[in-house]
Image 1 (cartoon, rainbow, N blue to C red):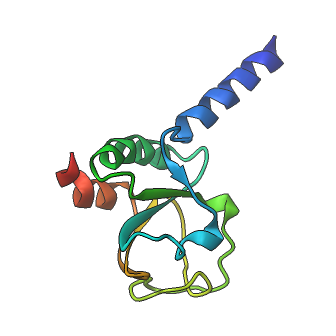
Image 2 (image 1 turned 90 degrees about the horizontal axis):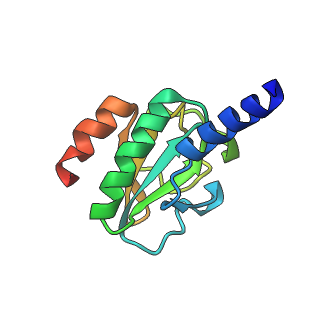
Length: 128
């Protein structure tokens, strides 16, 4: 019984953290999106701030034509450490320290980054 409850709890956490109506992309595809302007959201399973951000971004996503792409940090392979991602245009130069984190990409270049739940919420609240 204890193992079943742990399994159900783990599955519930996984479902809550996985935005079912979102667009998932592979880390390697971040700069291969055909849109001129879009957002990439980096999250980590089990992270409370990421869970709250995911719920918030699901609402935002409905209003901006699905231009938010979700990437699990566990699937990323960062080979560089940067102070900022502004101006980055390839995955080799990209660095995301932790989740939640959002980068805004315009014409294949990072033009903005939001590094925590509060920044993300404050910057994207006007979409709601």
